[in-house]
Length: 356
Image (cartoon, rainbow, N blue to C red):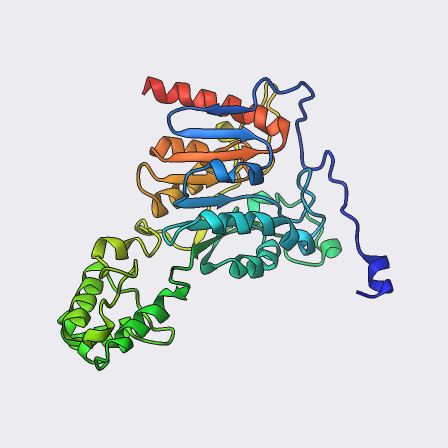
């Protein structure tokens, strides 16, 4: 880096007081809270990840690069540096069954995407939350901002790329069949289909298809029976025994798509009784996420009893949704005001659940 570049390097912009409608000055009464399903802690989530159980789902709603809270970056250029230690930590504890839901602005996500890829997160789908024209209420001077008014956020689905012995799953599957010495078309005989096995399960391009567990078991059984004896066992996930259907099922993330739902979520911005407010009606958190959207993504990618991480807790909306669904949630929040009111919300949620 030359002297000119060094001289113009931007300092972090102060974000004190930005994006907060409520600031509580009193010290916190407690720094940790949990019940049978939810565990939340005050502080930086980087200090807590190692104590959390392996996640099936991670819901990230952190820096947007809009000076939205103390610690947020001043624009999208600071996003990669902000997220990298978190993404690295997520990757260390995630499995092939883990789904990441990454909330952000369009440009914030674009800036973060290379970091996510760097640590093994594979892009699946970009989902658009459209809050509608009511979100801007006509109070935008387009001649000054010189663009169409923004009414959307993105919630991008990633999965941790599955690997066997460091090899991506597709390449490993193809190489194991090749190692057996069997012709590619023999995969069709193994699976009892006319053409699909060789055409989909052993495809080297974008048409590759994850073999269902029963088909994986058929492939490995046929290879171990008919393949070159010297190379056995084939399709071993532990290096010693042929893989089973049960083991293979764990090599991809969970997903159940509700009928009629697409990647565009038409949902007004949060208003009314769901927005957590203090007496007098002032909203505590200006970027609180709707519980119905969080419920939708948690239900789609987890089962009852699974673990959900909410690294940037805010008012712990993902933890509330997880609690209602019978999932186990772990969360941390570094802002004392949000943590205090988030605990109030969780306590109220716990009392409500006990009365049902």
